[in-house]
Length: 70
Image 1 (tube, rainbow, N blue to C red):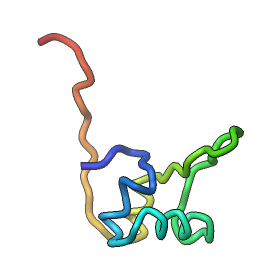
Image 2: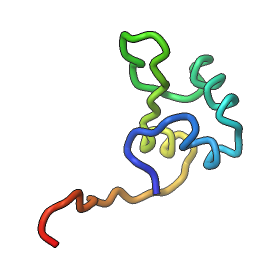
Image 3: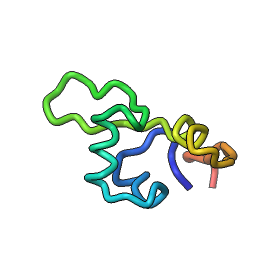
Image 4: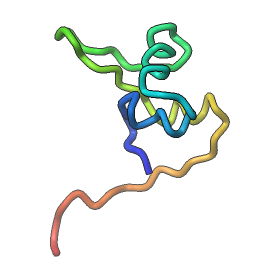
């Protein structure tokens, strides 16, 4: 399970790479990312569905119960 937007650390196991390797691929434009934001040190934000599409990995998006009645 992955969120719709993930960090390099979250997708590294999926890609079989280290977090540093994923960040290098983001910098080089080999992995699609969302804008990093204006603050210094902002982390890469990777749109997971787009990455899975590019890898040819089938997936299913399911809603998550984020609260509500118990």
